[in-house]
Amino acid sequence: MSTESGTGNTRQDWIARSGGHPLRGNLRVPGDKSVSHRAIMLGALAEGTTRISGFLEGEDTRATARVFEQIGVRIETPSASERIVHGVGLHGLVGSSNPLDCGNAGTGMRLLAGVLAGQAFDSVLVGDASLSKRPMRRVTEPLSQMGAVIGSQEGGLPPLRIRGGASLHGIDYASPVASAQVKSALLLAGLYAHGETSVHEPHPTRDYTERMLAAFGWPIEFSPGHARLSGGHRLVATDIAVPADFSSAAFFMVAASIVPGSEIRLEAVGMNPRRTGLLTALRRMGADIREENASEQGGEPVADLLVRYAPLRGIDIGGDLAPDMIDEFPALFVAAACAQGNTTIRDAAELRVKESDRIATMAQGLRALGIEVQEHPDGATIVPGPIGAGTVDSHGDHRIAMSFAVAAQRAAGEVRVADIANVATSFPGFESLAASAGVWLSTAP
Ligand code: S3P
Image (cartoon, rainbow, N blue to C red; front, top):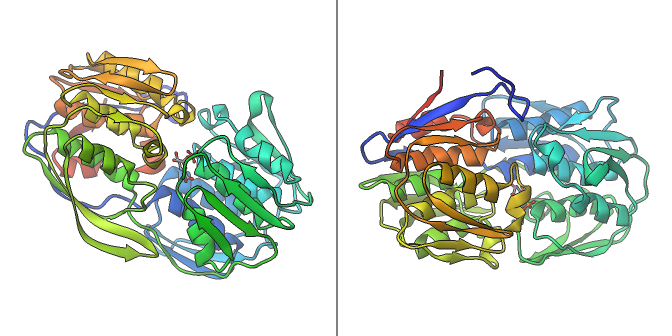
């Protein structure tokens, strides 16, 4: 198919179905998206040269690298998944008269808003059709409280117009949303602010910005749910080894858990505790997932995950666990559809403002395959049952597309997954890696 999708990419669909046999293999999924974005950003703002290994060659993270090149940072690609960032220091970026295109990436745009609020030059941040519908007030409002001057479209939507030369001051901010992107935007603006910037979260979120700032030598205090730093220091280049992305591994954790007889080893997966909520949830459902060869890579815990098929049972999920698995709910919906007994998800209203409204798109897609789903404002109840053949629309959302490729492994017939081009934003090579494990997946003619 070659129509334009809602995301601006040429539209592509998948046909997915069960290969009729268990899933097998040792798989290494690509580098972590959150860490890759931050490594480019802090590398750019540091003094000296930062070498990044395991960089995610996804469209989102490449968009962030392109933005920094556009504002004066030299970034080399010695080989795939490697970058050498020639840092320009905190005050070495140069303005661009063209808009800075973040593509599909909420992380790129929100964190960049924090960085650019502290610059001497004006900037305009734009994104694709999906990103242009995502809420930015959550960052523009607290950044304005810090003294930033940022204009947005009606409803707080992109493009963001950021005025240079503002004098920033630190604030003590209690965020109404549990969002690592909000926290990170404020901390990055805080590098340029007078005084102390402090962020409190309603539930702890991933702490990569904090850990990486510390690794680049910036004094920072943080604990789950809180971070604070002061302006006026410098970032010193360091090398970053990006671990494999737990969120990408998640699709294979669910796939191997639901296809009888399967056994998959996922190698050297990043196990930051603020990311592994799906593991907790799947184990509570009865999944057989073992951690082996636990070690540390670039200051982050990593482990191999040995996943074997196991019958799953429905559970209730909410509270602090929700932010720890915020990107894994689409995969969890699929596990729930294959379990014994209902699964109810609560406290996950943030899913409504991701790359798509993930509660609605998962409910709609599962219903199209014969599964009953009741939507709640902050979650859903999934009533498991046999998965049928059918067509589902991913709404240009990478994680929805990959989740339905996984669901198809238990379907009675073929599943057409529509609008899958954005899988490349986070998981280039998903199709071939999945095929190597025995997933039957092909691009529709
Ligand atoms: C991210 C934080 C999460 C997550 C996103 C990446 C990050 O978003 O959904 O995929 O890198 O900080 P929120 O912090 O807005 O929940």
